[in-house]
Image 1 (cartoon, rainbow, N blue to C red):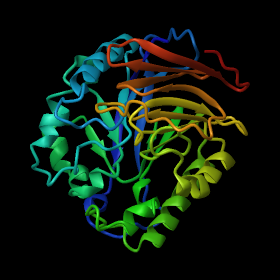
Image 2: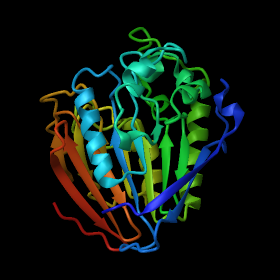
Image 3: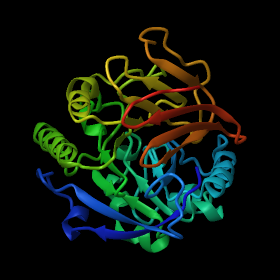
Image 4: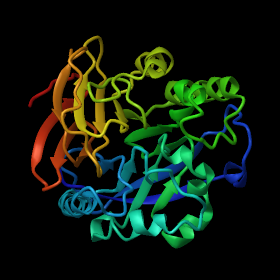
Amino acid sequence: MGNQCQWHLWFVLAITCFVSQNYVAGELERVHLKAQPRNGNSSKGDGFLGFLVVGDWGRKGAFNQSRVAFQMGKIGEKLKIDFVVSTGDNFYDNGLNSQHDPAFLQSFTNIYKSKSLQTHWFSVLGNHDYRGDAEAQFSPFLRQIDSRWFCLRSFIVNADLAEIIFVDTTPLVKSYFLNSDTHTYDWRGIIPRKRYITNLLKDVECALRESTAKWKIVVGHHAIRSIGFHGDTEELVNYLLPILKANNVDFYINGHDHCLQHISDTNGRMEFLTSGAGSKAWRGDMKKQRREGLRFFYDGQGFMSLQLSQFDAHIAFYDAYGTVLHTWNVWKPIFHSSM
């Protein structure tokens, strides 16, 4: 599916989103993308949207991060991608220590150098990012260093064809607050947790309910469905999943488990896609329970792509050598699938 649209970006940001403060309902920031056909000769409708997804990557090139990045560049050029999505755990092991941390250059700018990757990177935080200075990743200073970078706790990318809602899932996971003796987390702007979560879920529900996009996509770090090491995230299953299902979300995309996987909702139309294999993978960590809906699982390094038109979506997973491991097609308004 070739991309025949040129995308222009308008960033709608409030200065306050970079200030440490308690989350207040109604403050999800939006990034607006406007599609303009290059030649008016689109063969699949009014336009296309294509992007890559990578997660759990920031290891200064180690654990095949550089190899994955190289293949992302090749696939990105072939697909003419519009942007890249990062599912979190952007910098290991403990996030960035400040906005001046050299790890930003060492793990991001100096690694993803291919021409096709010189586009916008939309990122959420993972649990490892919260172990450092979480707010450093929101800093405008990082965008001065590398204009591709865009990260907030939660925000919306509006691309006409699709709305992608990025959700800060780490504060939803109770165990991070109970086991504080194991790791130190940067909870500025999160406490009181209950109010933060309540407001966040209200905003997500409101955004999805009001969305008129052809495709609704939600991105978070933690999995809703996974047979990887961490498995299903109980809090997301209980609190986030009902909102997604009630509002006909098409895809939930996550990282956290260091693998690639695809699980279909057996009681609905949603596809659960894990792309958390940007560097270190967990070989052999695969749960035997709850395998219903499983379409694909790979315990090595890699990434995925998602291409959208008015009528269909094409999902593809790749390993660290660029080999296509699994594909899946979804059609609207009637959903069909093929391996």
